[in-house]
Image (cartoon, rainbow, N blue to C red):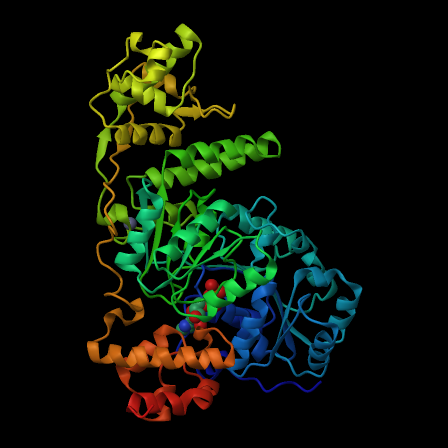
Length: 613
Ligand code: ADP
Ligand code: ZN
């Protein structure tokens, strides 16, 4: 096999990908892998992981094999590479045998630079024999956290990937993930036999994402006003816990005139793939989904990610919200969170399968998540801290921009807890938040009279707080473990070990005052009116060109049946609108314009800039 001419990764970055320089650790990872080293790469979503294996695959002789669980996205990934002039192919179960054979022949003939492969195929002797026939430049294991059994995306097929190092020890391997906790990191190295690999850990900060968590009151209304006030016409993802709420929410958004689509594992496969495809290909679609949606979605211009239900862990939450703003432009991560979320999640854990240790682990994940919701600190700082990264308050989250007001909730907590203790001691009764709040308020409701709760000594001692405030107290006590929810299905509240020091006055209870929910309470809308945030910084005149470029892009993408960002991302269009290149050389100098795209789209873009298009 003749040695391929050695091109420098930086030259390829410039000519093929159209970028000026490496980001963060990219250059170092690439040098290490090109030299034949193994690597574990931890970078946040949008950090630029793909180049870490794509460039070594282009520089080293042979074909780079990318193991990815995201079968539905392989076609787009390959098209995006082909659009850059990279020879790429994929093999997965969505193809017919003929199509697979063609791709295999291309790989054997040395005519592919990159080959995407579903992990389950590696187990087949046929695939292993096929790979034996190839010159392999690198193995990339994408979404490597899928080997982690306690993680949130476990895929059993991933456990078999240790075969790569055993059967092809001379081929460098690079494992990549956006999941950062030290435990997951260790599991990846252990299970993939990568203990000797060099680990690259990028900063997990995503400074362009503004984090906001609001008390949940009328979630749908809150969501609609967020979209109207700040993200009109933007692409976004709305996460819901259940399939039913996905469907209801999508339907409600459509009624509000928002271009929303549902996505969950219970929808027929053709509907799912059609919806995903519309989200990827068209501008400004809102996807309402369960967490089954999103892994590997590399759409760079998702402007907001909203959570209508509490995620199970900070890890999952950070990964889901990380799907916003991959292009580095301002984006929003917004969540509505309330008492019912805490109750529901605690009960899901209680009722979940698995042993006590597993439940304890789920409980710890939830506690950390609740800590994030109720914190008085900078939210980003807390999350980065969770991933082991020290940072300063960010200035771009709700607690930084609009610091929550702390108040001493000790007395309120004592009133609530002592009511509960009395009910239990004197009458062997337990109740949910609603009845307890009625008692504290001194309301003679039918249920209060039925149970003679107006005879309790704590009846009416809590009239100084509103219902909403009491619910916030209950929620925060639950979040802090100073209260528990019964597992009997009745949502009754119970005191815990930790409640007693509060009752005895040995421990104070600092709480945060819930912000009053305002419609679209973000300080600075990321864009003025309709359109994309990318254009937010542009002058009116440049903006006009930007919109024309976008319209051209939409048509071009549709005609070629590729996602819009595969033609050019918003960042590139905005730079073109601003710099107005007049010659091919000037256009080539714009970030995101490589040789192949210059050739394919150069004339059309220059004509548009010139006003001829
Ligand atoms: P990840 O896989 O880590 O989520 P990607 O590899 O999809 O991230 O990269 C995110 C975005 O950043 C993509 O649009 C990509 O083209 C862009 N990008 C990556 N590296 C660079 C770079 N060195 N310069 C400019 N843009 C980059
Ligand atoms: Zn902050």
